[in-house]
View 1 (cartoon, rainbow, N blue to C red):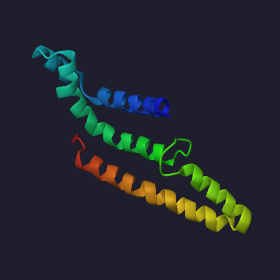
View 2 (tube, helix red, strand yellow; view 1 turned 180 degrees about the vertical axis):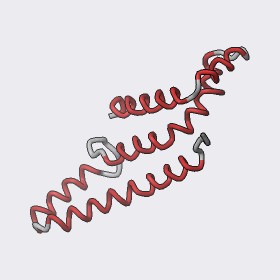
View 3 (cartoon, rainbow, N blue to C red; view 1 turned 30 degrees about the vertical axis):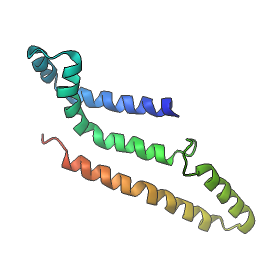
View 4 (tube, rainbow, N blue to C red; view 1 turned 90 degrees about the vertical axis):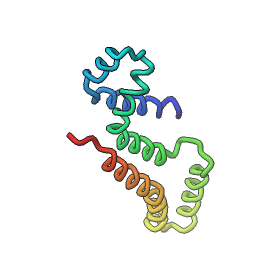
Length: 124
């Protein structure tokens, strides 16, 4: 699961680095910065501002993916939902409760990343 998510994170960071104008890296090289200094001091801080919202989307997608092992017990919740459907047969109510649980988990993250994205947005 880490490799799967890392691919999305790397692609998001790569697209953020591509948003930084080429002149920024050239200016840093002309000042004598090494490659790592150029990344750390010039490129990544500027790229972070444009990458914040897409990284939030990756985090929300990771939260909603039930295949990933985490201590919160998604497998147990799925088994509980299956048992409740088999015993009570009220599929809409039970599915609504679990959907509300996902909303409670993901909506605050979405609002937080949206607020941070607006606060740190680059004025263009």
